Amino acid sequence: MGATAVRDAAAIKTEAQDLIDAYVQCLDDDRIEEWPGFFTDNAVYKIVARDNVERDLPIATMSCGSKGMMQDRVVAIRNATMFSPRYLRHLVSNLRLLGQEGDAYLLQANFAVFQTLLDEESKVFMVGKYRGRLVLTDDGPKFQELLAIYDSLQIPGLLVIPI
Image (cartoon, rainbow, N blue to C red; front, side, top):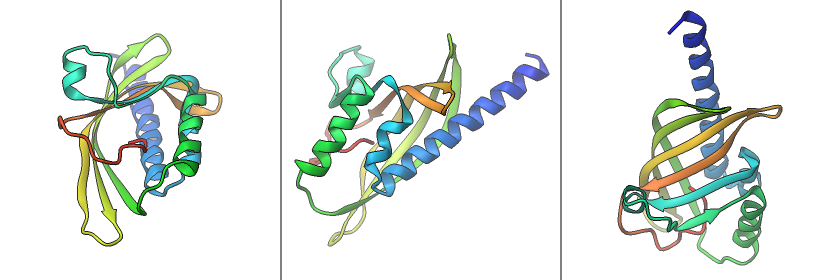
């Protein structure tokens, strides 16, 4: 691999890290209305169990097949869903670029999400890994696909929000 390819890979990894950092900060700050802006118009977002991924089963706990579906999810969260106030904190580590397919860069990172209810101690909400496809657009890097693959066979009682 030449010096230019190494520099390009480092630059793409920095773009990916900045995107994922901004993504989780948006969710942690409850700026859910901004969430669809991290994706291309035809993006796919899914929250799916690791077991289903490993067995190549198509069932996802949450599935959005476009930015429009993500915007609908935001409206449902804000207007139709009732739940106790809570704080989320995402920790993301071990971001890796796995390769390139066409104009998309494949990435993977581990995540842990903690939840704090106002009258309870903080607890682990979900642990898993992100697997995604990042594309560079005129508006900056965006997710063309993002899977939040959770490790446990059990899901939290309140999984209406993106991870």
